[in-house]
Image (tube, rainbow, N blue to C red; front, side, top):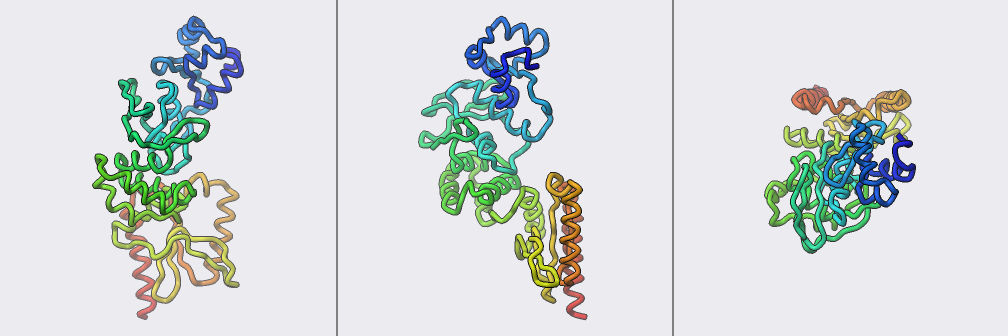
Length: 316
């Protein structure tokens, strides 16, 4: 593939998730006739007016590629535009976004342009502040959150809010600013309950979603990131969610993400730590994965049974 286009253009396309604009082609000496030949031969594909897919991505099904490709599609299709909403959050590396984002951009000073080929041109906020992330013009985190969460599901909205806090992209003052910016937007009413549920201690969207399941079932955890100690009192790890039982022990729920815990070395490390904690006799464990979120009634039932056993043991 590198022989099809100049190497610098190929590298530029790779940085843009395989996409390239006509202006960039002209800059690197790839004429309109040559672009047409590349499309006819099947090496390139015209995605929208002025943007081509060079086929230079090794794994077009990869999660990171699917998350960022819509961002670059919108920015390349509308020169001088700014990434907004979920696309801006993707550039800020906020977790918890839907895997397949819609391309969304805004033009300077609220100018309008017709949408095309699934790309949304938003007329957002004359006062919107912007910055640069991953080399791209984008809305700042506060505006991007305000733009996005009104249109997201509750679980996705809380996942990105938790992530923004956890990663240090936002703080309490930022959240107050977001809450103000949300007012008056379509869908703002559904966000009223979010603010008391946001918790930056959640280390992944998986933890956020599980916590919401338990909250909605009236078995919300007592603590997040509970220190887990061995028999000598040394902290071996931190449990994702914890319920304090009547006898002073903890019921810990661990949410195992595939990318973190599936590697053999991670499995061995997790098992060794858990064995040390269990040997101390102060902790009970339940472990779930992302697949269990679709069977959340089972998750809730197992937590309730464990809590009931802890209460019964004290009564006996």
